[in-house]
Length: 449
Image (cartoon, rainbow, N blue to C red; front, side, top):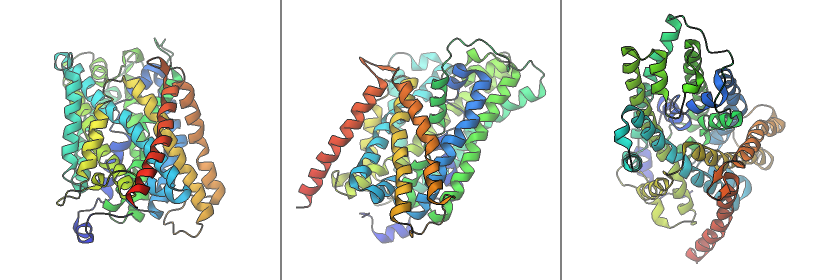
C-alpha cells in the first residue's frame, strides 16, 4: 500500500509496544464488564456464566488465532483489508471494509449510548430530553480530537483508562467473598427470557480482535507483538467478565435487577444501599463512563484507517488519506467517520448490538475465508505464527464462528427496525456495499486515466 507520509516520518514516529497494544485491544474488544448487564437479565446467572465461558472458545479464540497468523504474516496498515484483498481480490477486499465501516456506525453509537446511560443512572436530569443525544455527539468529537494526537498517545492512554475502569470491580468482587449470603444460583423467574439475545450480547462483548490489525504500521515488531497481545487479551477479557458476574451471583442479588447501564444499581443492591454501596456505585458510574470513552477512543484509532487504505487504492477521494504532518493521524478520515457515527445515536442498545454483530460478523467470516485461501494460494508465505493443524486446522477454525453467525441471523429476523426487521435492514446495507464497489471502481479507473 502506498502512503503519503514520508519514510523519514514513519521511522521517527512512536510505535505501540506490547502492553499498550494489549490495553488498546482490551478496550476495542471489551472496555470492561460494562455491557454485560443485558446477558444477566436475559439468561440469569448460570446461563450468563455458561455463555461467557463458552463464547471465548467458539468466537474469541478462533478469531484471535486467525488474526495472529494473518497480522504477523502481513503486518500492513489496513490489516484485514490487505488480507482479504490479497486472498480474493479487490471486490471482496472492498466488501470487507464496507461491512466493517457500516457495522462500525452501529458499534460506535453503542459507547456514547452506554456513557449517557451511566450518566443518567448517576443523575437523570443531566441526560433528560435531547441532552443525552448531544452528550453523545460531544463524546465522539472528543475521541476524534484525542486521536489527532497520534497512535502512540492513544495506545499509552489506553493503559491508564483500563486501570481506572477495572478498579471499582475489584472492590465489588471482594464484598461477596467476605459476607455470607444466599447465592442466586437457584432458578429465579426471569421477566424477559432471551437466551439467543444474551448470546448475541456476549458475541458483541467478545468482538473486535481483527480491528487492531489496521494499525500494524504503528506497532513495534508486529510479527512478534500481535500473537502475544492476542493471547494476553483473550485471558484478560474472559476474567474481567466472569469474575464480577460470579461475585454478584454469590451475593444473592435478583438477576431481574440488572438493566442496560445498570452496574451502579447492581453495586447498590449488593451493598444493600449502604454508604459503601453508594460510594462504589459512583465509582462504577465513573468507571463506566471512562470505559465508554476509552473504548470509543480505541475504536476511532483502528477504524479511521479503513477509509485511508481505500483512498490510497483509489476507491475514495485522495483527501481521505491526508495525515497530520506532526502526528501522522489521518485527520480527514477521522472527521468523516466521526460524522457518520453520530448519525446512529438514536438506535436502542439492543438494535445497535444486533446490527453490529450481523455486519461485523460477516466481515470476520471473510477473514476466515482469507486465512484458508492464503494457505492454499501462498503456502510459502512467511508466517511467524501459524494456526496449528495445517490446512484442515485453518478450515476447522472458522466453523464455530459460522454457527454463531447463523444464530445472529435468526435473532435479527425477529427484531423490528421500522417497517422491516433487522435482518432485512442488514441485507439492504450489504447490497449497498456491492453498488458502492462498482461506483468506487469506476471512480478509481476514471481517476487513473
